[in-house]
Length: 265
Ligand SMILES: [Zn+2]
Image (cartoon, rainbow, N blue to C red; front, side, top):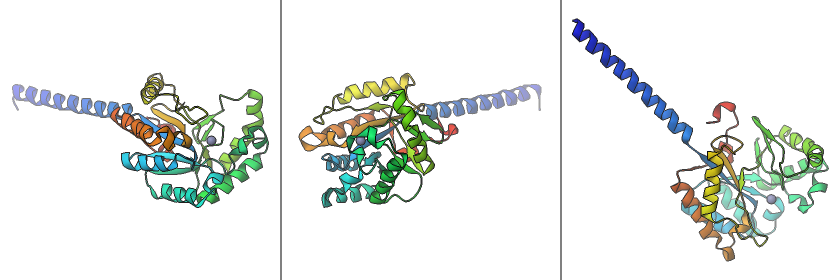
């Protein structure tokens, strides 16, 4: 090989190495920039359930439904809604307790075994038999996952100390507990407070400023009754699904939420 050919050979080799480095960097950057939203709808099945199931089917998106046993058992219709939700592979049905504490949280959270019983009753109503049981406790924004343990920011330290034992007991019995990063809030009437545009701004703010529990993963809370017919529920939810897809977010179910440090991309 002449010196000239050798140099040409050497420079083309360096060129190839630089190209492959650039390509691997850009694919890593693409992976890092994927932002995932976990839509979670609590208190189902209530008046919005039919619209929720229709919108999910129509827009082909993934959501998690946190269901309440006493709501499921309220009628044959509600049981049909559970069956329909379980048949849809885009929907993860999770546990939101049997009684929803009957809205008496202090009493409910005073007994570890009582909370555990209530959650286990709901496992049987929903038909959840395999751990982990994807769950959200009524009225409590706590995470208990292998890599994430947070206390509820909305309750007092005294309450938190009294109730901490419940959360760990549940985790020890196979319950993965999920709080949330952001809420699509509603009036007492069920009417959504933020417009879809406003919610999109808040989501962008949370991602941009790293305000989520896990970087690039956002758990979004909303409630079944917001999507009733008289509140234009189906249109509102479809509008949100469309806007999130157009903004390039990935929508996923909570069983895909990172539970290992290495997954936190
Ligand atoms: Zn609830």
